[in-house]
Length: 529
Image (cartoon, rainbow, N blue to C red; front, side):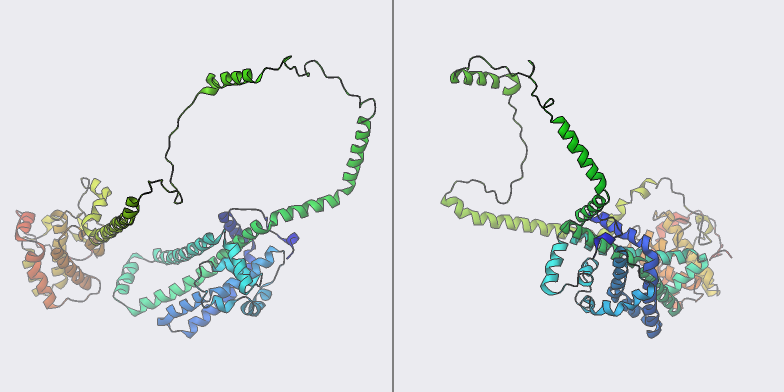
């Protein structure tokens, strides 16, 4: 390894700055890194896709993820050669794979070291330094002393970035789908339709392979740069390079330095001539004046005491501040047998109190989580402030949800429509009545942009469990006929008809809601077509 050939600016950096240098390496050398990495990873991904059936693509993704140590070695091989100004072609990089597998601890990285969070930082010790056994362990311990936590957080950060990028690609596809296709896609996905699950698995596999190809060089380059920075700290690479540069400059400027030396020598001879070397008499200002007589010792002490008592030197100021007591410091207590007798009981009592406080804290956190439905909605301050400005919608899902559009006897009218083979209109009337009940009686602030799932979610903290169960059944039957075009069973409809007044809208609430409303048989349910 010749430091003269290094192509990066080697100097002492902070650990995060060193990682940023690795990212810059990838941006500068991407033409040499990505082609061989893409050939290797895409070949493996294609073989796994062919071998495993579509319903087992998660196994292919798992194997592709487990083979990351192989991609690590290829990327590090390319970056380390580029760092020392050694250009290698794509074929040369791929042809080095057998050597990288057998001589770099690959099998250990694929087994018990696979889940190490500092895998990328330790890789140069195996691959570039080729250390094994105790030497490798000691070298790894020395290098990790000041950078191990940063290497681990780099790994954790890259894992999260991978997940975010895969989700972002899914959202990119989703936003280009038509609105009707989006709704149909998610409804069929919830109903466990096999074709949609297969497409999700295929897209997930393609997106994950693409993200690994794009992101993995940044992880290895950042870890390698962190390794280089640690070696610079331990071995003073920056100082060595500065001396090498200085030596090179000195070799190129020998004649100039010799001429300068001759000029300095001649100037020295001229300045040290006898005429110039005569000592100059000191002036009167330069002569130090001393007292003619020396004071005795007792008078000297008195003068010093008077000076120290002056205003500038004699002022005293007391400053008090809190000082943390170290664990090694011990309070000086009277050494008697009574203290020795009560000391164990005091320690036991303090331990019991501390343990009890931790138990109470844990129980309190568990209770807060368990009963979160009773208090979590109180934190929604924004909605509480907007409560007075809320305006109920007139249309939801293409249905009229104004109170005056409903008949007086909602379940009776709905049952009549059901008997007349108007199943969709019957369920539409029940669902419209439920929406009006939620808006006007239960104070659920529904919006015209809500979906059926949003209605259930916003009603969860506003209505009782009995009403929520009824609303959930009604929503299921409404989705079944509105989107899947399947008629509900007679038994399920009887439950909805009979339970309207007892389970969801009581007689009092219903009379308050729709009293003095003209009978309206407008049952045009469903979406506007």
